[in-house]
Image (cartoon, rainbow, N blue to C red; front, top):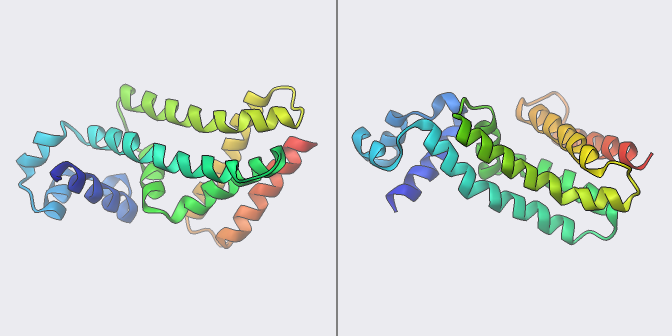
Length: 179
């Protein structure tokens, strides 16, 4: 229960203040634990981030996968992939994943995040192949690049409304992969 409380506090801190806000004193304060007790659960801030990724990323990816499964046809699946990720920007779990990816992590944590992102990208490779794309893996990585840029734009509180950013990203992806 304490570990879950620490992870929940870490999500809140990341959502509210980014990686700079995720400190052991802040975690201790949020959970009512002594700072030394936090070290009993996590050896470092990177370990907290790594566990958050292990716990939260699969849940988030499952939501993207479910949106794609509900879509009919390759183009609709690609649109669902983009839209769902951008819809989740406001979700606390997603905000934590965004903050995590900007964090200074050790090599093992970075590799786990890379592997998780690889699983996400694999979700649309088949749909891109279904559109007849000659290199669906490369196209999937580029599609994710558009999604990542749109996420950063929304996270920055850009002048454009998130719906405008989403429509632009979907349009760019669909025209890029179908033409």
